[in-house]
Image 1: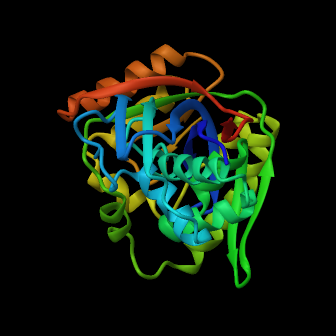
Image 2: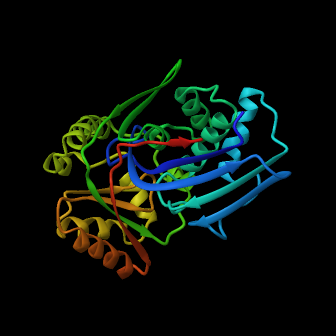
Length: 301
């Protein structure tokens, strides 16, 4: 049994327009946590994003992942556990922060107890909490992932992607995932389903080849964005502003409230255009300039 371990997990963006609950993409923005078996009881320290809003007790998602693994494997709780979280992924932003935190805890427990579980088993445990595998699979494996659920479990396909630059607009809006999901209709038309099925296939080709012209035609969605955009003041205008400033394509990042824009050029102008559109709606906004990541979660013993 190991006594100390560090885990790194990347941010992710999910859906990517038409790939609702199926597509996920890893981004070069990482949460890290150091775990050590020392002292008595649970001690959590936070650095970076989420100070003052994230809990520092057993309800913290990192701790939840850790103890979920122990319960699933019938392993004893350590007498003492110290966790130092270095958070760079803004919570509740549509960048997979909850999936990242959960995976960090699961992978840390697996590593500390001798790695008895495979990555597939880690994914299954995470999806029991998350409900779907789009963010989780991309964070775990890196690159672009397509995840579907079968009777026997999750089927995930990972695709390498060339380095792509993206611009993230993070509006200061509280939009819990459950609220964003509750806004969706119970049924959709056949036309909407056909629209998204074809474009999801094209999004995979566009991202794996780096073809942003194809991405601009594939990124449009009919299943979730029309309903969720109504919950985010300024979002529809920010998407239009980004396209006018040179973005090849823009989509909600996950369930929102963030927007992700893909572009070869004019990144500062695109970020400024999205920020101005949100601020015109009275919403302060942060802009992040990131790249896609081929690397997924990392465990350092």
